[in-house]
Image (cartoon, rainbow, N blue to C red):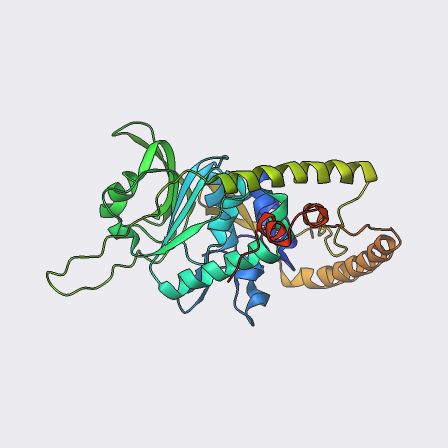
Length: 363
């Protein structure tokens, strides 16, 4: 499923296309998508496909199309401090983006059937925390992943403010998903080939809204011998943060604020990638329209008679882009520095405490 928007050259280009097609509509969702490079969640050798609006699967590792993740993030209506449950959490790509929005006082849990995928997700999460400058620009709610079948969650599990299921849900499992939701909460899941947003309005009342036409593989159910009881999935407990964690959060928040003020005073500019330029739209005949969910999307069709005109337009476009690149190259662009890490490293503190404030971990 996917292919609703043009392929991008890099992550920012992909996000530009998703915004232009109105899949990304709010600033906080855009910031989360830009902060995490989709290509980082692909295996080596497959990254060239990362910025196409297509799903990707290799063995048990799977990523949905970017347009679907965009609609999910928008449909969840995330806010700081909410609890989130990702059923079929996969690589952790979506859970990590959610963590950037719900912040350190939220709850971020994921259930994934395959142990190797959970290990992969934990590796990607560790890479993001330890090596990504984007991590220091947000207050983050770290996802916690467990191995298990999301259809076998323990009956005494707590409820969540927001839930997403990343596999096709059969109608007879719909109520099972709903009871995991708090009153006032939102559940987004694919059911009967529609990505559906369900809001729990009361103890026994819900409101449903179709978001997008989709095609998902159905939820997997583990096979077992006759009479064998399934292993109940125990979700992580919701615990109060330790004094150490609270201290780290508030110290980093204070230093981040000071670093941002210092940057403004010194006039430091965010580096603008030279290759990010808005593509000029080519004028083509529009012969047909197609529905994608509740959206009417024009389908561009060119006739053979237009090929020569398009080729000439391409040449003119290339010449204009070369001129733009020369103009941009003459402008001094200041290098962006990770001010928060610089502030922490400059503090007169023991190295072990600096490492703790930087979120470095012992392996």
